[in-house]
Amino acid sequence: MPLTALTGRAEVLGPPGERHDEILTPEALEFLGSLDAAFAGRRTELLRERRRRALLLASGAALDFPLVTSAVRTDRVWGVAPPAPGLTDRRVEITGPPERRMTVNALNSGAQVWMADFEDATSPTWDNVIGGQLNLLDAVERRLDFTTPEGKRYRLGERLATIMVRPRGWHLTEEHLTVGGRPLSASLVDFGLYFFHCAQRQIDAGRGPYFYLPKLENRYEARLWNDVFVLAQDLLGIPRGTVRATVLIETITAAFEMEEILHELREHSAGLNAGRWDYLFSVIKNFAHRPDFVLPDRAKVTMTAPFLRAYTELLVRTCHRRGAHAIGGMAAHVPSRDAEPNEAALAKVRLDKEREAEDGFDGSWVAHPGLVPVCRDVFGAVLGDRPHQLDRTRDDVDASAAGLLAVRRVSGPPTAEGVRANIAVALRYFDAWLRGSGAVALNGLMEDAATAEIARCQVWQWIRHGAVDRDTVRALLDAETAVLAEEQPHARTAQAREIFERTALARELPAFFTADAYERYLARRTEVRS
Ligand SMILES: CC(=O)SCCNC(=O)CCNC(=O)[C@H](O)C(C)(C)COP(=O)(O)OP(=O)(O)OC[C@H]1O[C@@H](n2cnc3c(N)ncnc32)[C@H](O)[C@@H]1OP(=O)(O)O
Ligand SMILES: O=CC(=O)O
Ligand SMILES: [Mg+2]
Image (cartoon, rainbow, N blue to C red; front, side):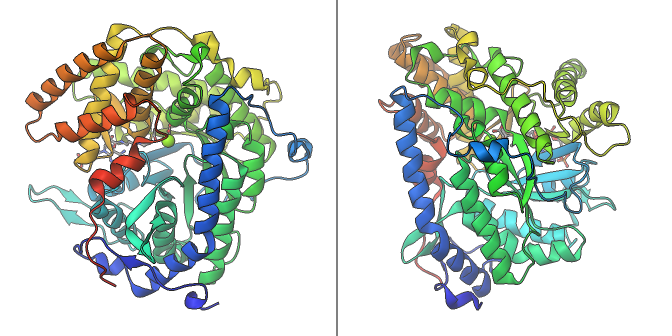
């Protein structure tokens, strides 16, 4: 089918940048136009359905495994596609934004997989979005070598991690690319540009176009992705089933549809990942109106909490019943240059990975190259020579709705320090995000969009249920704003504070800080260029 058969081409409203024309070619823009014509309407409907479901949950509606799909869950016959080249052994996966240095470092890190992240770890400035695509293209073409002005040389080694790209979620738009004046879905842009430029190149290199899919809320969103893959493959003449995608189970509603999500994507599935930080955010957000779901300080809600263990164990069981990889989540601690905190961080990450490996996960995520050896050792000890542990079916796991919803067992009020810490982290993260960094290390912890969402959402929930009063929060916000302004003369304190006020202090709880803040502060449209 000619690319123009479905529509015209996307228009570029973003300011021109160095080498942008290599990514924003007429053919690539036509490809994006085709994806938009085929799927924009369904995306809009699914986002409407998200809002409807959120209102139902806020008003106390019950959450359970869907009755209509019980046959999918009980049928033992179906399974997902076998692992694609480069995705059989996934014991260590490093994540990070596709920034140029980090791209080289991640690919050389010794991890089996690199998740190049346009979602939680990327601030979606136009330069980051197109620059990230250029770095991916250069990585696939193996032309990433460069030397910094300080003389540090970066070059790709012999053995590189397999690339999986995480496009932004369905809720976000890319304001710098439009059709008929309407912004494109950010998911379709990130997916589409990478697929257009790199799918065939990856196949030629013996790998394939592989993806991580964030923030899905139900099986219909997985079906939409599957249909995107089918059309994209057809349009470029790539055999169906070449794409592989790992879905992050990182919303409470998706946890009740893990089997269905695998089933929808089975021809293209590369398993599931336990996206713990967004999952926690989703739990807080969806039950924010309910007094018995108030969670204590963020630091006290760990992966050993019963409701989080129920979720991760169910994920392993679900995946392994279907021949799919189960990939663990992100431990928050990052290495330090000082010996003592560094040892403490490594020990905490080790404990976390040990629990995952013993639970049956086939591999896990690390946020930093310095954590690759820990994760490799821990999974190596459990896997031995095997590339995964799909044979551990975990039939012992309690797959009940009650287990997933046992939030009350860890509920409790926050401490004064817990409130302050959330305000401080959210404010600092918003500032970093506004200045183009989507992931930062703060107090030895990796903070990204998902953890910042937890921080601001908890404050909203605590105010709502009288665990802290609004005036106290405002006073703390004043104090933290002043500290930030002093520490960081170039901080965008006023805007960071505004984001906090709009997302933690508003009467209604906004679904995502990123959606509104992106339109307000990051989108910079120019006149139509093509
Ligand atoms: C909730 C979720 O979604 S989790 C997944 C999304 N989040 C992420 O992916 C976060 C990924 N991690 C990061 O972005 C970074 O590790 C941070 C921001 C937390 C810390 O980064 P830094 O402050 O630069 O750490 P540090 O100074 O120790 O880095 C040392 C070197 O390692 C590199 N490095 C650090 N993290 C990574 C990474 N994830 N991938 C590749 N390289 C990395 C740095 O670029 C630096 O390289 P250089 O010496 O060549 O300049
Ligand atoms: O994307 C991962 C998460 O924990 O959120
Ligand atoms: Mg996430």
